[in-house]
Image 1 (cartoon, one colour):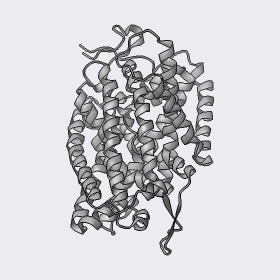
Image 2 (cartoon, helix red, strand yellow):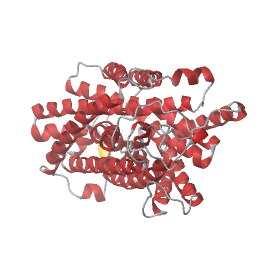
Image 3 (cartoon, one colour):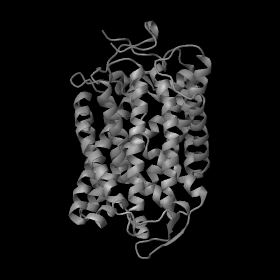
Image 4 (cartoon, helix red, strand yellow):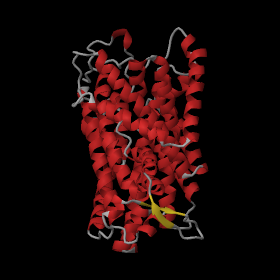
Length: 470
């Protein structure tokens, strides 16, 4: 039986439709595949490097530290509210429905952009493997096929991503060794970081000092790179065992993900034979492998890289399809939309309409957009949601003082304060265009809430917890 802190949800609960087929290990495997250390490095790290140069190492170290503190907040809150709506359900319960609806819109924006940002990496590395393969078209085709796979039963997908996760960790270990046995860069590139400026297809750029502002600006993309540990909460309605396991899954997955990203990344930077060429490469991490081990080994690593990115795209699509499904179950939209998005496959027990919506949007974006444009905007969405989670962690702990929780974060109140400060500093350094776009989405959301959701007598109740299963 899945236990929550509510022994009798009564009228506040709702029928459990998703099948509880995951144990703690399978949940963590799915979450790690969502974080996908290798795919995140291969796809997101080049964006961080293009912003901060060798200062990207500092950005990743800061991101890892902030992420652990955010995960501690999520772990406590997720064990109290183990709902497929994840963070938006938590924010709604703690901060109220209007703010919770903004968190939902933030999540929906991620559902549209985040799978596409990883899927674009498939085309990038297929093109690196064979220059005749077009990047955007191959990314879109891969995303479409992954969408169909994501409709299958969650337990089958858990087995699939677990196998690929083992391959991914093996390749990451190989990449780490490749960098460490060929360290060529001095510690000075960290103490005095440099950035490649002026590089074009026809002109060679030059290395210039990196400012603190550039490193802080890259922090958002680095946080994006280690993101995904919140999906342990999104899979909570499909996970067996006590609610405390959800908190444990968040912390374990975040810790492992951060370690398996930072160590290989640092090794690749210091193992680059030519820092300027490394920063100029579209695929810097695999470029180091080619320089150290040769073309054949690099090609094999590229194949592993593509497999890892496919695995990540699948795990991310699985997560966000459940968020979209939960929004319909919570009646956040007009009833015809809720009925459509809330459909669950009788055969696979999966939210098939929501999965198709997420996959179709991601397929279109993978074909139309560039990696940098998708990553920078999605990073802002992520950081805004992190700030709301940190505030929720503070408010909930103050309100529930003296009450027992399934999982309780250590070192209170340090983690939420660090998470909040890190989010604020990161947002301050982002582009006005991305921030104003998020503000516009929130304003439109508040208008929708005021004119429609706030006026309805029923609906939009993501604060409920699913009924216990026998």
